[in-house]
Image (cartoon, rainbow, N blue to C red; front, side, top):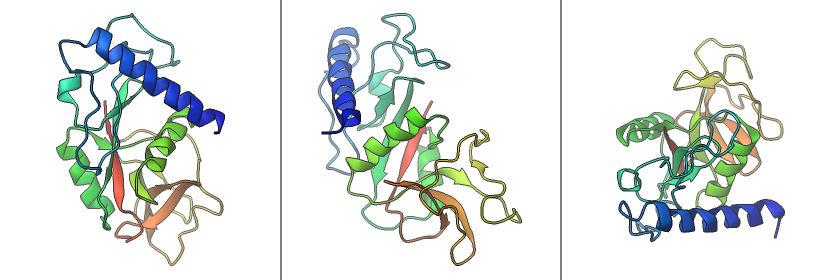
Length: 201
């Protein structure tokens, strides 16, 4: 088993223990299951430093576990909760965006390699081959890589594209999907994406 997976399993085990000890009044400590459409996860019990990924004051909850959608997983480096929703059938980028906003979050953004790797573990645990994240390209941008940014206004400071991407294949690929090999530019109505990742700050 790759080291990355062992670290992820250890993180989930630690998170489960912390949830039981520090959030006893907020949650029963058991993983939640909504029938397989979302990835099970645990909520960390101390707030990490958003800048460097170090733990903050011990005992300060990152999130109220009862307020998060079932299946949400907290990334300890920034304290944000993430939820992969596998729809089982194609969904457009704009419909995924609307669904994300309705849960109180937005389509996931990526600001570090560690966050990208974390999202890949969610994808690997799902039934989806590709899911939407929040990258988008404005109309009139130079192709294939001009103008890309995050839908919530954050700058796109990394380029974790898959091999040969972005390529604007067939023209009009202005929305971002996440695959096991990295980011992929897709037509915003593509049938390749059968889910999306919500980020809740």
